Length: 108
Image (tube, rainbow, N blue to C red):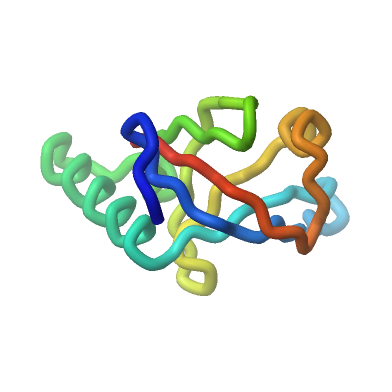
């Protein structure tokens, strides 16, 4: 992890979740370690401040890969730590492929 312009920066791997009969495939990056702990602390602080949990326990984030930046949410997962969805436009613009490691910046 390194800091850049108030972003948490880390190397992650793109993975696919198959939506089954109802939905298509979704692509995510898993977040754990120090950045995962910071997301957990942020979620807890938001819950303490508001008195309620946000949708699915998520935390709103600004994500950045290369020159592409977008607003999304990080979602807690018992199996994955935290998950950040990586939309098709970002994957295409930055040439990302499933199973490939890449640098992800998160601000929250």
